[in-house]
Length: 583
Image: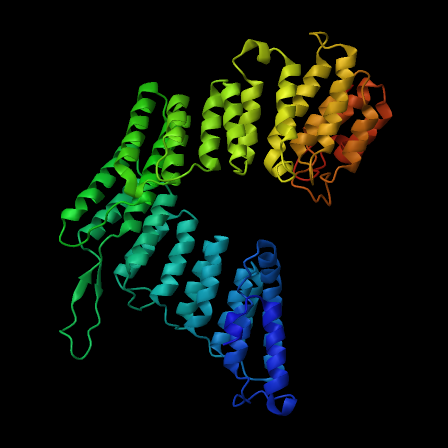
């Protein structure tokens, strides 16, 4: 009971050690066959099961899962040496711990070891491996596991097949999923009768939706509605004779098909669900997910459409869906889908109207990002900045897209005075930077704003005159360096490339700064710890900075170090190729 409440392998091991000390047989080692004591195989199984569970804190969660599979294997070794003897549940729990830690190869190695031993394999052992394949999207391994079960004459249950189909669905293989379903329908999976259930059918629908195969999804939904699939109900001794219950589509079935339908078909499916209240059975009313999926399909369709009239027509469908959602089914996700649909059309008036008219919920950062993006498309930098600062005032976390669109709005303003003034652009972006938290100053979030601001400084330094005097250019370089240094944590390639461009644009060229940055950055090739690597662009800017200062030796050293183009060959650094530069 105590172990069932423990999360994490290390904590479970401590509890197990305490139990063994207090309740072990005479406090000493047990024989392998001793299962009669208080510390039974069930206690060990509970400890191993805890190895696959994680704590709530995200950092502790990662550490717990990494340690969990190792602790589980150590407990197995203890059981093999001192007892009690492990059973099929023991191995199932160990495989589950390995799977949750992402150690699929370790789990497969353990399975091969069991297959070669005299241990009697059971169906229970294969289930966690199939679920792990779903997480890793490894359909070939999942198929080999099913084949192995057939070869060993193990009973394949509907749960095994549903896990297998889940792998196929995540790999977007609708044809294979339909083929497996037909085999199950014909009751010929390894000469075993496996009757598909609603989870099976919904998983196949998911495979079709993930493959964007609406026709197959719609056909299967129609078959379900027509009662093709039936499940034999089990009757007790006092019940009537067994009858066959027809499988009816549920809300998941409809929502899955809607997620791959075109806007008009999505609207028709919503109407069909609304009218299902008239049916004697099988009533499936749309929920917020239904409307969110339908409106999202409008946005996807708009991105593929070419005609303006078609885009407006699809936006009308999205707004109709929003109206049909009503107060009962509307939430922030429905609104955010509608806002981003308006953004895809380029209608910032509708996007702003939806943000201001939200009912029964408060906007989140996704809603604000959609409005900022729609305003940025039209160069409305004042309005975009107003929405951004309103978002910050409400303590909503900015995203990478937030800063990407804010920077785009400033850099592409339709106000000619701002568009033509690099100094004013820098001032506005500096104002945004000054209010960013340390979290936002990491490149994973604020990278686009850093890159845009550094690009502005580089353009100021590159301008021949344009009102940019020597004093202003010196200030621009100092500000660029301060901006670059204010990045929290690792630097990505885009920001490093922009800063190296600033060094090469300076007059005289700051080649020594460029070389130092290239050498000292924590994203440079080989043993890189950061999210990016040195690219051809970054190396080019550093070499150009050296060339402008007539530091040919330094430039050639950089090429030799990071490009190494001797004998006319290319050396790959990270995942990029570098060419020889000719001066």
